Image (cartoon, rainbow, N blue to C red; front, top):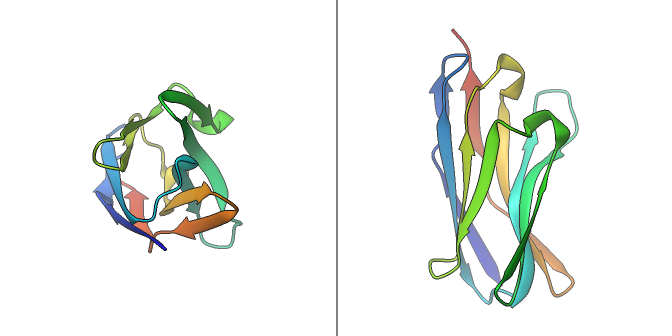
Length: 118
């Protein structure tokens, strides 16, 4: 079993920045994807960014709508993934979920609200 605990959401003005964190604990698969999805009211959950760890090699994927604005990073020693969000727009408002996938299983955090509004 894997547990994911998120932090860092909140209210920010357009153009501002936020940093989300997600700490994983438990039986974490050696090779896994760890990243962030989001869900806005009335919309489906969508991938924001994810990073695959396979040994010492990392691969990153970003949704087109966040390229150049968001950066995902990991601290493998702490089993923590971060999402640095900059140049935030009102349309980035959503609940952001941490996600881990590996060894045929996937896990979700409880979600953290990000609201971009003036």
